[in-house]
Length: 273
Image 1 (cartoon, rainbow, N blue to C red):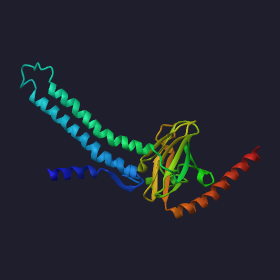
Image 2 (image 1 turned 135 degrees about the vertical axis):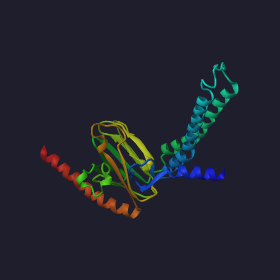
Image 3 (image 1 turned 180 degrees about the vertical axis):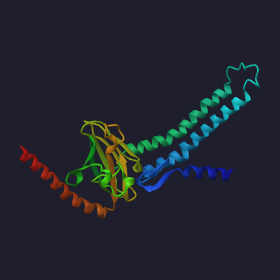
Image 4 (image 1 turned 90 degrees about the horizontal axis):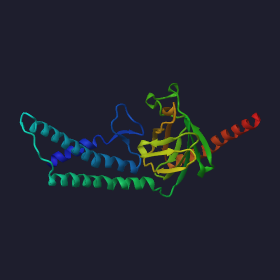
């Protein structure tokens, strides 16, 4: 029995997540490698609670179907049963599903509570969805902003990054709480990074908030997850997680780089008038 349980656990854990950080793989059936504690908890909940329960129910139903087809077919039972009910069975198929739902609900509610409760933030970023790109603002660091547009195929250094790479990246420090504020300039969008367990709608005229705390340095990819028009698939999301030192250096660069771009755009607008 212990050997069976060990093999059962190993089977499900092998499908827990892909080893490549921040990026999906061809023919992938599992999750991306987690980059936040929340995503690690989501994967554990899926692999060690949901999947065993779902698999057990599926096997039980399959067994009952096969048993009934063999045991109660017309060749073996020329006279149909007149049984109308069974109190014990009705109690069992009421109590057992309720218990299973409670087992699923308790960790589900905990995960939902953690994802919806934003701790004290070390950094705030505002993301504005538009057809079909993202604009990012850093209000805590001079309120500079920049657009992130998808790179075309001929601009990619790695073909695996098709529909994922952008010309600019969000940069955040590792092991810091990042509060993300989301809105939209036109239609519904959704900001999603699977490795962070983050998915939040960007709604016109409304400011939604979510958060993440990346615990691994690297580049993480996501895509808009709300149908937003013919180029919905062409507005990817790119987050670079770096050390605090690298983040401070990037902030110094970004404040100069994107402030100068904003100034140039303002001058062009004034000149056009």
